[in-house]
Length: 73
Image (tube, rainbow, N blue to C red):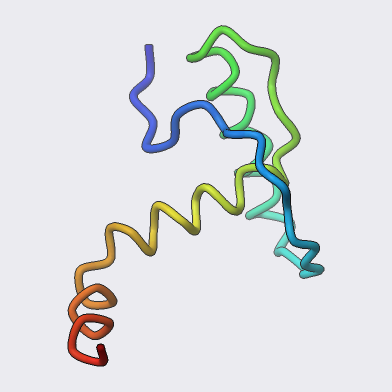
């Protein structure tokens, strides 16, 4: 089993955001969704659903952001 930074994607009420992604990033998201599906035993999910959890994880693990946020409060 491949160890990925993301686990199963939670079903949460989304907020609509429109953005353009480079084709290479989209291909990577498709591949990631396929690998995540195999690793969790689920069918591959829509790659768009990976963006929010990836951003959430990125922000949660960014020490510089956490430090700046604490300093601002």
